[in-house]
Length: 243
Image 1: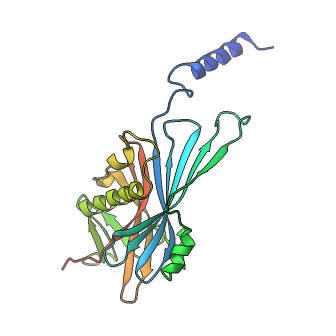
Image 2: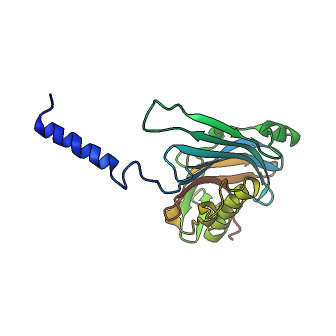
Image 3: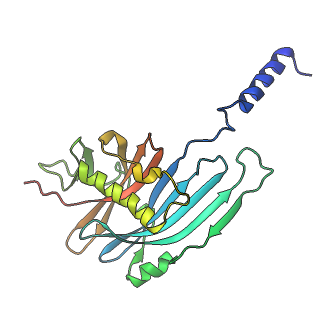
């Protein structure tokens, strides 16, 4: 038998759970974008990009997956292909309702391994990238640029803050070009911006071995609190042009 104090606590907790604005309330829209290394050819780096969207629900997650090819010559995303769109629905607060997974049909859907083979590429896993602490080259960030180097007179690789933000914006635009938004209306993914240093931190470094150089890529973890968009995207960092 419950004591009066214990019973009162239980009643308060139940009331809080049922109250407006509690767990049962509609959550804000939240989108997460994450890149993983997938393959490399003589001309391109291939990434698998996953986009998870809660669609303003507690129990539904829409996952879009696309394959992206980034050019070693320009650093741009020159091509992208749809791979899969999955809707997972279930109640996260009870185990009585099993999760349901629906695989949506996509036009021009590809097998990413077929694309890699067509480009005579070899597979990669994300373990090919290193954490900044383990990489041979160090990196540092200012309000004007992000640099990678050996702490000599100049960085080996450098990208301006504006160019970096433009690459991130182009990557998000690639997502919607290949896999349009599941529902109409306002799209936080295309409104998200990461203009300042404090918006992003590099968590991975990858150097692709080319015949004449190493092509440098950093994976940036960025968050736009206003749009609730969280990304981990690889961006190309060109060789430094500083004297």
